Image 1 (tube, rainbow, N blue to C red):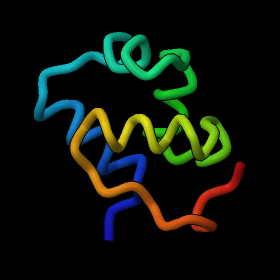
Image 2 (tube, rainbow, N blue to C red; image 1 turned 90 degrees about the vertical axis):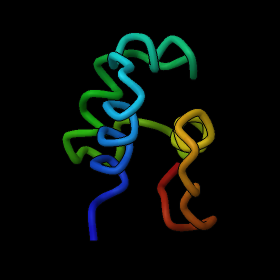
Image 3 (tube, rainbow, N blue to C red; image 1 turned 180 degrees about the horizontal axis):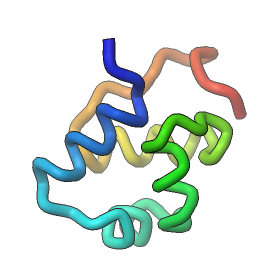
Image 4 (tube, rainbow, N blue to C red; image 1 turned 120 degrees about the vertical axis):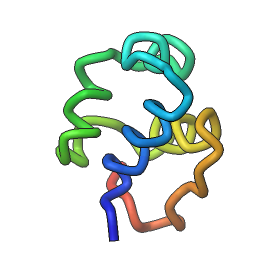
Length: 68
C-alpha cells in the first residue's frame, strides 16, 4: 500500500497542481508539503493533512493514525 504522502503526490500531479499552488490552497509551506510527500510524516500537522486530503478528494486517515 502506498504511503499517504505518495498518494497525495499522485493526486496532486493528476490535478496538474504544483506543490506551491496546493500549499497556498491549504495554508502550509511548499517545503513542508515536499517533505511530507517524500515520507517525512512529521512535516505536517494532522489538520493540514486533512485539508490536503479534502482538497484532493482523498479519504483522510482515521483519527489516531497521524501524529499531531
